[in-house]
Length: 101
Image (cartoon, rainbow, N blue to C red; front, side, top):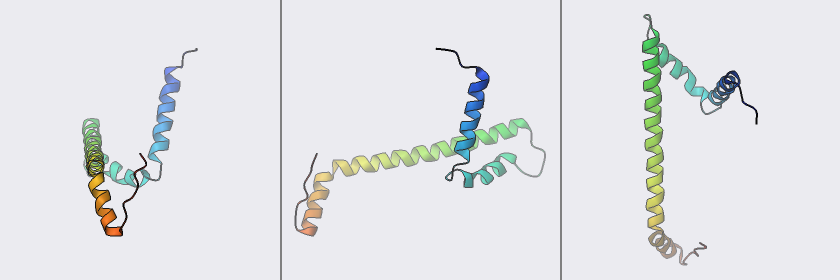
């Protein structure tokens, strides 16, 4: 197979990032992100901008990692207690639901 040039890969990554940022779920976050990175009214150097971008990404990463771990824990807890939950539901509705696993 032929080799892909580095310029093509950089352009493809840039376009993919542009498409993902312009998606309906990310686009509303863009003004806040730019305001956070842009800083205050004073002069802002590249070092401060890079630090602000890194902290923003770390904050988002930590938040969504915690949300994902919480959802995973909740799912595991519900699955572990499925027989008890099914029994409680059957008592409430008068019949035991079937498990088709």
